[in-house]
Image (cartoon, rainbow, N blue to C red):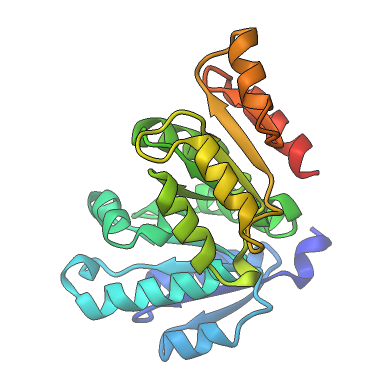
Length: 259
């Protein structure tokens, strides 16, 4: 485990516990340099820009504590905005509801309590590997008025890319113009057919704005006839992909486009 000798992991918690001590020991035995953060969470996470992975041990009362939820949101934003990795440890019963209230954590790895140490080991090693993978820092925006399809695509690719979803053309424009330069989107998957403002109109608006003109745009289309594809490509996007494409084909396509 030569490479992991220099890797740093920070365990975040609201209160130190025996369970956290066991996790700390396990990570140390794996060869990682481990620090614990149990107070002044926002300030201490803010200065930990060198840490490869954060493990956040959530308390059982987090759903009833608005201060803790707010802290979770702020800390998660800081970590993920810097392109760092995070694993959440918590109770299975509140996982879905917490993700709805703190959407930024939806794409983070989650382990249920009681913690399976072997599963923790495997998840940590996977996340550490991804922390050095430039593709894992790439950001893709999905623009599709069908939330179910957009969420399915996010599930397919979230292990490899940072993913955002908007469900309307004007939402996409607003989103892209508001994000800071260091958080720019690397590629847009844009639904060709949408109500009100469709894909071609969105593409035209993107090309007219200096901040978004250079972002590669890939049309998502449900029609694969020669005539339909010709109409799509006349607009000069950076490519197109059929909505019937498999997960494997989509991942290969994205890897090629972002290489």
